[in-house]
Image (cartoon, rainbow, N blue to C red):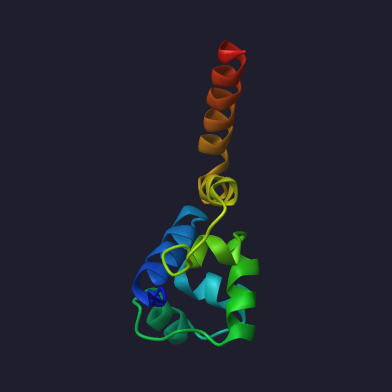
Length: 109
């Protein structure tokens, strides 16, 4: 059975990326090269972006396509998802989490 495209979860994940980067819809839409209204429709799961638009969104969000589409893909790389999830955090939180992981690895050593 084919995995359905979950546009709603993709939009929610995109919104989380934008909010984590502390960007308004207007600022993020400008970075993506789309209108604020179109971005709002994508974030709410009303519209799916065209491929060219999706590439611009992924680049502006700083995450992989896999991160935004993970609920719609049969196979995902867990390492990429963790990396992308970290990238959605503010810099301070990223550093805390990286420090925690490095200490954890060292203690298991």
